[in-house]
Image 1 (cartoon, one colour):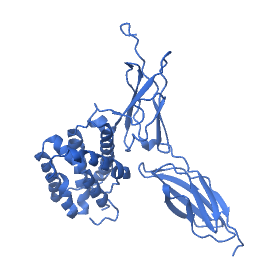
Image 2: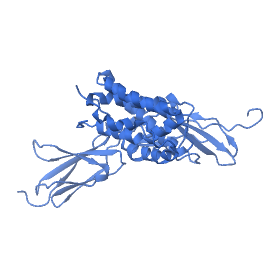
Image 3: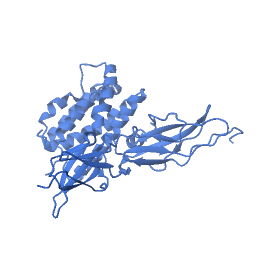
Amino acid sequence: LRRCLISVDRSLIEKSIPEVKRVLQTKDTFRNVTILSTLENLKSIKPVDVCCVTSHLLTFYRDRVFKDHQETSLEVMRQISSIANSFLYMQKTLEQCQVHNQCQCSQEATNATRTILDNYDQLEASSAALKSLGELDIFLTWIDENHQETSTA
Amino acid sequence: LTGGVAVLPAPQNLTVLSINMKHLLMWNPVAQPREPVLYSVEYQGEYESLYMSHIWIPSSRCSPTNSLECDVTDDITATVPYNFRVRALLGSQTSAWSTLERPFNRNSTVLMAPRMEVTEHGLHLVVKLEDPGPQFEFLVVYWRREPGATEHVKVVKSRDTPVHIETMEPGAMYCVKAQAWVKAIGRHSTFSQTQCVEMQGEPL
């Protein structure tokens, strides 16, 4: 079964996300709480589950995070738009895989993303969105590592 | 006129000219006799138009501008459709927005065959390629000009030119052609013209 792989636009990792992280993490008042920390222990996610977890988390950002965040800085707004539209493109790529049945969801994968959503719901929406945007580098690094042709995750 | 008050007309005929991943939004001028008219450009990616349709983002270069075109390359950062709108500004007056007829997707950009210069330097083939930007890679194909020649391929990032291709045989003729490739849109250009160079020295 050929694995479902997406590639991450380098400008996202090298420009948009560091800029958003630099600005937003200064406004994050809940320093000892994380939303995506579980991605640290998602290392054990089997390659066959990577597509499903990626798809769920892209949907989480699309439907919750980008909507719950109110941004006043024009430059940060542009960077978030850049990220949101890149995620939309990645999702379209993943949808091709779902058509070819390469995006199965095991219980473990569903639980992993469920934990992230629960973390999100622990906080008030705008705070949770702010924190999730500040943790985008964790998510993108995880995608980059797990969506390589030779990755052994 | 509206209620006796002059209404500033909206700019017309918005179009996007896109070549080698450089995207230029253009429109017709709004004629005003006395004062110069300014224009303001805003954009919406597919995400905004689908999920946050009230959100329009001022273009990073043209809000406002006195030009009739706007380089929107830095605004278009994903391979999804983008909407654009432009309005005219004259003193305190603003026109209605004029919106691009069809959203623009950067995967429709025109990719030109790369400009290439091939020279010989101490039995090395040296291939110089123009650098259209960081999103470009090149496929450099070279072969020795002889019956049944084998083609060799080298993938080169735009920042890594000129390319020095390994040692050639003296007195032999080598030919080169190149093609541009943009991973972000999954497309390549046509091949450049083939260029051939004869290596110095006596054939072995």
